[in-house]
Structure formats: C-alpha cells, structure tokens
Length: 399
Image (cartoon, rainbow, N blue to C red; front, side, top):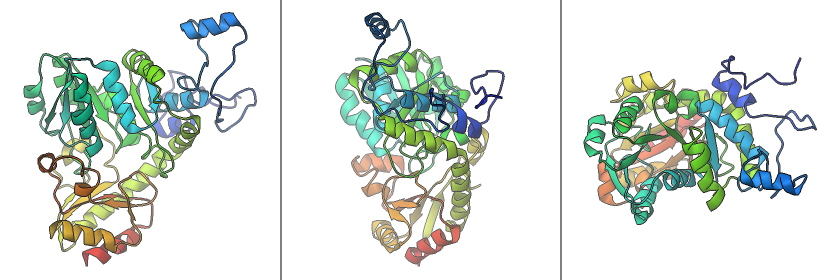
C-alpha cells in the first residue's frame, strides 16, 4: 500500500475536502508526511548543461525561489485542483494577483469592464493605476448581465467581478457574465475570496480566471499575506507566470506552507463559519435599530435563488445597516468587546468594520453611493466563536 493515494489519477474524483488535504503533496526523499518548507533562495544544478536546459525551459526543475519553489508549487497545485483549473500562480497578496492578471493579459488600448461592487482597493487599483497603462476602465452593476452586454466595446478584453460582493453580498450570475464576455471576445475573472472552492467554483460556470486573496479564508487564521490566480495552462500557466517570474511579486515559501496547512481545514472551517453566519443574519433581522441585513442565505436577499443555484453555500460575510447613520454604526462598533475592529476577514475571530470609512474610504462618495454603501452600514466577517457570545457582543451596541 502506498503512503498517499494517487491524488492525480484522473479516474478518481476527489471532493474538495480530500483535495485540500492531499493535493500537491509529494514527499521528498525524507518521506515527510507534512509538506516541507523549502527556505532557500536558489537551487543548484548537477552540471552546466542542466542549468542551461532549466533556464531555457527545456527541462522542468527549480532555479530560483522567485518563480520556482517546491513549497509554493505545492500550494499552487493544491488550489488549482480544488478550483478545477489547469494552472495556478501564487503571489505576494490578493491585490498583486489582480495586478498580475491585468498586466499579463491586457495591453494599451484594451478595455476592462468591472463590477461597481468591488473591494475599495480593487477600484483604486483600476481607477488610479491601471488606467495609466492606457487601459480603459468602466464599472457596471454586478447584478445586471444586460448592463454588462451594453457596456461591452470591441476592445473589451476582461470582465472582473466579485461574487458575493464586498460588503453588500450582491450575487452576480457567473454563467450569464461568462456568456457576455465570450460573445464579445473577452474573458471573465471572478474573485472567489468570500466563498472559496468549498462553496463556489466559478470555472465550472464558465469563468476563465479565479482570483484569491489567500490572506483570507485560505489561511483562515489571519497569519500571512498571499494571493493566487487560477485558470488555464496558457493565460495563467505561461502569461501570468511569465509576469510573476519577471516582475517578482512572488509568494514566500513560509507563507505558502501556512496556506497549505490552511487548505487542509478549509472545508470544515467554511461550513462552521457559514453555520454561525446564517443564524446571526436571522437574529440581526429581528433586532430593533437594524434597518436591513445583507446575507445571501436569507430568503429575502434579492439574489437568494441565484445564490442557491450557483453555489453550495453562502459564506460568512453579513452586512447590516443601522438606523442613525455613521454615529450609530460607530457606537455599535465601539461597544463590542469580543469582535475585532479590523477590516480583515476570513479569520477564526469575528471581525467588524465600517466600510464607508475603512475598506471603501479611499473611493469617492459618488462611487460609494453607486455601490450602495451607506454611512450606517456595518460589515461582519463571522468567526468561529460561540454564536451566543457573538450575539451578546452585538446586542451590547444595538441596545
């Protein structure tokens, strides 16, 4: 009997939990059971001829940890298998994963069509920096495929969407947007940070690329920064990899190892996060002073049925609007004793933030209004504490 199952056997259809534990793990001659950390900047060759073959791409192997490192490669292979992609390129952060995709696949004169419900830093990246490279950018309602079709141009090359969106958990129809993109000769990228491959697999719905901030749920404990692009063997395996190799926004071996360990528990954690979030959303919906709750798992969510069709779960992000605007939102946040006041998410610990002045504080008031982000909006990333304790902590502020 072998030490590990043949995880790469195409005739065996492993589930996401199994892939999260096993994929990409190849023991060295030391036969370690847990993946090793290859903390080295470079690798040696057996001869000058072998070194030349490695640099020429004629032979597979390790050269320099900026672009070839066994620990990073193990994380890339594991995440690619979980998402159903052919290739994955790991990066130093989620934001640089987005940058790497755009820089590798677009050029001067191209047009990028993006959701107006994106994370604030993503909007800033597109609006303030990507345009400097001669790439046009426009924003569209993520919920309206017809609006995306109307906004397409002959030079549109990429559609970019988060679903669920941050922070209002709006759901985009991935298959419909993929059809719009492909009809116009473009490709679709989906930020899958909130649901992860445990709950949603955009590539199976027609998307061409999946973006991750591994900093969030893939890690799961708020320890390391990292990102990833998943897709096909050409656009990601060669083009995005080529940009990463040359520009150097690479993931460190230690962080890759942390993410590998995070993927082992991802399935269990996501289900526990969601269980807490669903119950908390229902509870918030019943509280005085709460005007509206945003959570796809609620039957009253505008895209609840769509969420049911294209995903296997609703995630752990619950946003809600309180009466009284910013003053009431800040009072609620400052009254908590258990929740962590931080804009990060995906942690075992519940985090709370005021999007209008944190995650979306750098974009214009007009852009916030277009995205539906009010001064009374509060975002929770529901953690793994006891549900009753989270409720009691929030009740202190709502009271």
